[in-house]
Length: 342
Image (tube, rainbow, N blue to C red; front, side, top):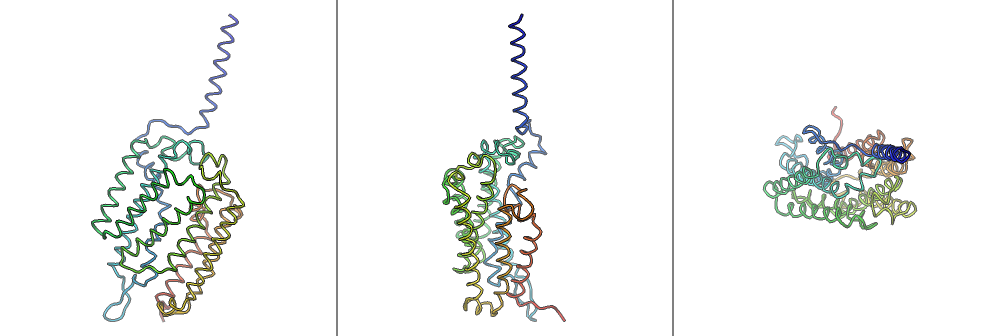
């Protein structure tokens, strides 16, 4: 009788421990169709697509966005704008496929992350079989549009972007510093693709600024991730990083980005091309953006770390967004020599 009581007691104890452990995990109940659709949309990270605006950079800085009518009035160049918009859409779809594949690869690591465990695939809201089929669909559609509606050179760069990201997701993201270098290379490919889609020559300064800024943002992302619990288990490369090395990397790339941008605005060829020596007036916005980003990733912006990624931190920070808008307005006003109407 005593043995039965002890057995029952042990069974109850094990049940309580199991229940308590399971309660820490996200529920993975069978997904409904509506929740699967919402989960897929969340998985492709539309809020991250802002990065693909780099595809439009060549058109924006080469003054092809606006033309002029016979009477001299400004008018939108629909052909160039349409090509740039379509190219950006292609990269958004490819990025969505990459994010989906990345979540499939990282599903086990995400399940022990305090925030990422709630991602649709990790939580079970989106079945892995659905996610695989959806990723394949996005790749086929995006590359087909690139080949049929734009040109083969653009398609080749888009395909290289996808292959590079697959290599990153499966293997190379585990190598510290190389992982951030590949992220930067992805941004450079976006800019090159934008130039090819709109038949616009991409300057050396644009590529240099893009690469340095992407390195800066990438190291900021790693700095943000390093603050999380079990960082090494969530991303293998983080074990090789330290706060000191990332602080140095952020300082070097941040300063290099600012210096390169200043040099670009003061370059004689730049002044001659835009027929203006006022582009340097946009420098304060660039420097403020760099400094504000450093405050956001370090948790010293008075907000703490509330978001899953620095991109979300930036997009939810009023000062950062306002500064970005003012930079765009200033650049457009200078490049296109806009003046208030009388």
